[in-house]
Amino acid sequence: MKFFNFLFSRKFFLKSKGLPKHIAIIMDGNGRWAKKRLLPREAGHVRGVHVVKNVIGLAKKYNINSLTLFAFSTENWTRPKNEVLSLLNLFDKSIDNEKDKIKSNNIKIKFIGDLSSLPSDLQKKITSVERKCKKNNGMQLNIAISYGGRSEIVRAANKFINNAKAKQTISEKLLSKNLDTYGLPEIDLLIRTGGEKRLSNFMLWQLAYSELFFTDALWPDFDESIFTNALYFFQTRKRRFGSLMDI
Ligand code: FPP
Image (cartoon, rainbow, N blue to C red):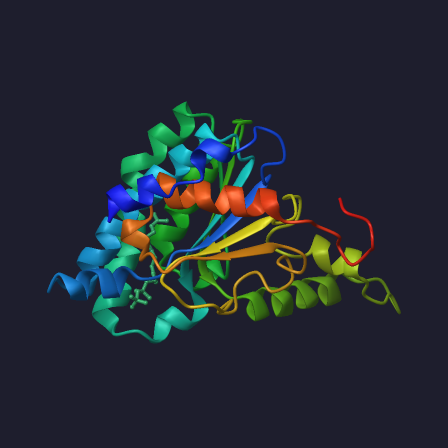
């Protein structure tokens, strides 16, 4: 499979100009990857973390400014307790294991989502790694945990209401300012692995004009050839943002 991926890779057709600045990824298929191998679902998530590390390296290699990864959705809380606990544990451990490398690789890290619903120890680790890497000015890495697009928009609207002056009305600009992603560049390219072609409540506001790349590959099988195929796909798109002019 890997050999065929390599053989059909678009890597060699990529141009250095016109790469996406901001890529977001829905990492789907860990459970199915594990099931195929008669392993517990958790084994798929563990393998998924290896791929996360690899993809961060690929994003750096291809000079992507910003990478946003969907690690845990507001809906994922309804999964069996064991799976939820093992995922939270995996995030906790990954921060412990990777924080020094994130810092030394000049990566700026930000966690987005309803972080108040996470265990307090994990919240503390999140704050601490964000602070540790605050002065970094290289690639921006965003991890969405306990994240839902609708929930983010509702939280943003409430933040606005709580700080609004009398009779002030909301606008697109003011709503954007209150989103978790405020200050980050627009998402140019969304990649979803695992064969489904839907957004699953991810970045509903931010994906308005993004290009969408879907692959059947399960997240633990995601590799450089698929990543570069997605970049190539992006470079073949004509982006018009609703106007008649190609941008
Ligand atoms: C979806 O696959 C994947 C998740 C719910 C978890 C994704 C998390 C990781 C890859 C770990 C990320 C870690 C860090 C540190 C960011 P699924 O379980 O829905 O798979 P299925 O569709 O095959 O059941």
